[in-house]
Image (cartoon, rainbow, N blue to C red; front, side, top):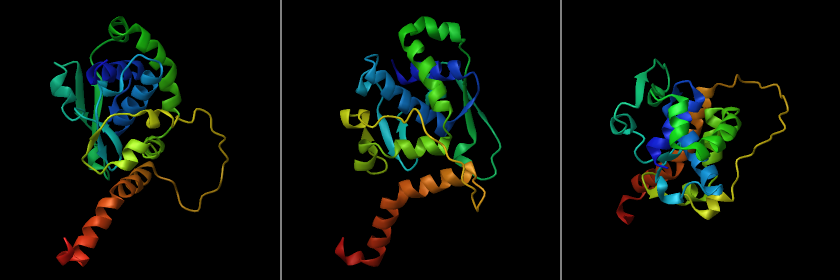
Length: 198
């Protein structure tokens, strides 16, 4: 399967527009699951190390590369300007299933597990994978066998704890962005502090 085929499958199964960062994480985790099941290969989709976790190379140009199958719409967002785009597919679920029946059966069971998690939770989980941790922002990589050993927690015991501060998904994503940029921030501040050592 290609990035376009997998994106169409996820969008058709979800049947709702999906924001860019969430779509990137859904593609990443679904690709991992399809590798485990022998449907896809690690190099079928290459990833870019971004502060918010692995991002499929080609996600930005997905609408142009899809011959109109996938389209995006701008949505108002007061805080996260990089989350102002939602993706949808024009393909029907039936059309997508005909192209990839075996994969669609697996994704149909796996997507509800992912959809129980917030975008910020998916970001945090993707940032645990060895490939993301060992690369620098902007570097390309493929999913490795070590990444596959890091499973998505399927069942979690949730304990309700009263929070002193209101939890906001946008704030959680911003925090994940800063975590992902931390090595770059440290490197740049060190370069400013010790400019003669470079």
